[in-house]
Amino acid sequence: MHSEIHLALHRVRAAELQAQAHAHGRALGARPPRDLRVRLGWTLVEVGLRLVAPPRSVAVPQV
Image (cartoon, rainbow, N blue to C red; front, side, top):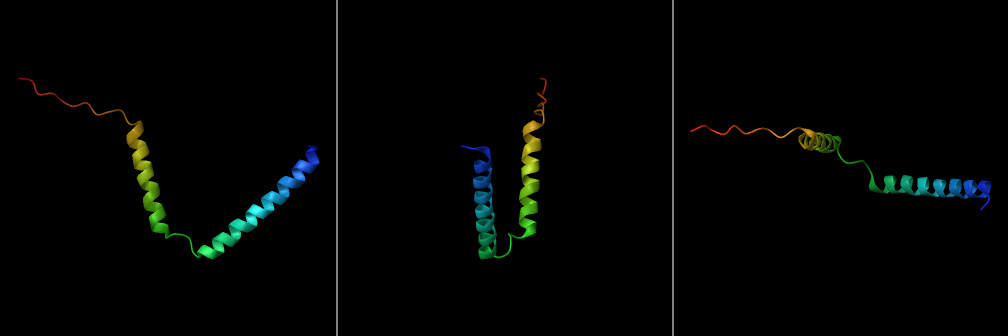
């Protein structure tokens, strides 16, 4: 396919997708509450930090 035709088709499809996304956003109304997004974000950060942190060493009592 000629590169300019490919680029033109890509631009048309991108415009269609943007129009659909815009219409979908208007249909849904407002975005989810910001506080829920913030809590979810910080929870993901906490989980990520736990995954990368070295395991804690457990002290074994000496008898």
